[in-house]
Amino acid sequence: MAWWDFGLRIKALAKKEAVIYYGSEEIKQTIARPGSMSYEPAEKVRDVAAFFTANNEDEAKALMEKYEAVYVYSPKDKIYLFNAMRLASGSDVEYESSMFYRFENNVDMKYFEKLYENEYAAIYGLKI
Image 1: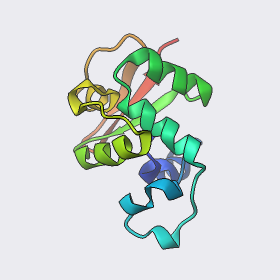
Image 2: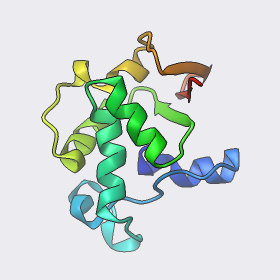
Image 3: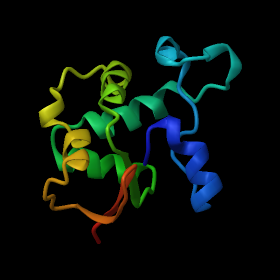
């Protein structure tokens, strides 16, 4: 589970499939060069955005299960992405209440555990 900006990188470097690789046409105003890319189905982009903007872990876990995702890629110092996620999800959740905040700030969670971290990102796994 990752925002679309990182999907192709995940596939190339980690050899894992991401839920989405591109933005949707609905959010093309948030994309630097929307005319030069493919688009994902709006529902998938909304779901990934809803995952990161969820204000509770149960909702986030359900979205992970819907797409059979087991890992979360959480970039560091990319707060500007949160606004695009809020737009895509239709949510008005505050940053400090979101899963995005929890991943970025390493908040203790019942369903997710940090597996890896470097200066650019953290990888979380869904606890079994």
